[in-house]
Length: 324
Image 1 (cartoon, rainbow, N blue to C red):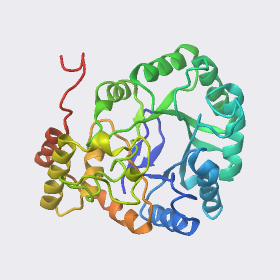
Image 2 (image 1 turned 120 degrees about the vertical axis):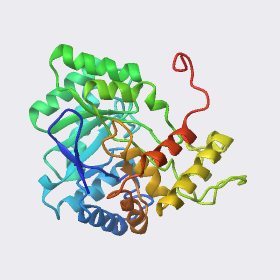
Image 3 (image 1 turned 60 degrees about the vertical axis):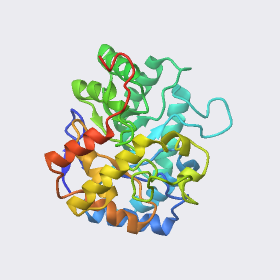
Image 4 (image 1 turned 90 degrees about the vertical axis):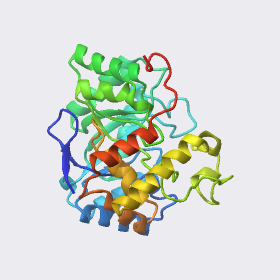
């Protein structure tokens, strides 16, 4: 596995990031440990979780695994901002919540420091200066090495970057956006901001909750049972079951066949070769699924194959002013 610098820092991370969202939930602890061993055995060093995943269980499972490892060999990322209780201050990006949340994450992870601490969501109720000054304090204290953001809009990301620069606070190192063959709106503003400002990009859901896994074909009228799409949420059937999606899936299948690869491998490989992307986050539910996803590294799509996928996945209608 190759390694890339995270944004404009000297921190090197593996070109694939292991997402631990399902640890302690859909993936039991034994399987989670096997996934972690396989990923690091293949050269992976970058692992992402969040305090809200499994209500803290993901961090706990990862922490128990870390106790068996040399801590400094791994880059551990987690997030703050989601709801961790029922009280008014158990969520968001206030100073109070961040200071409590970082200590709780450190306890669950069983470590003295977090490599990358990310704002999970924008918080309309907290002044941005309060959030960023608190994160700067965490870096200065040694509890956190780098800071980042997830699920920000373009103007929010640029404002956070500018505020850090204005006050001399620790700059944002990374952004974690949704970016897939089926979701390319990040190219309109988020990715250009990241490239212009030296912010690394670690993309989530590269297979869009199974849509690009090979299990969906034109003509289906409902998602498979027990899939993520079969339960309510942002990955709804109605949102993606359209002609554009079927065209992308058909072109992905054709490219995969021509390359002698699986559809998931090609979908992840496409991201690895997109400008500005540091590391896609892969979140396998089983060890065998990880084996497949690890096949996304060590080879390249040809320029012709990239162009086929680019053209097939280009959004049909870009909103104003992006179509100008």
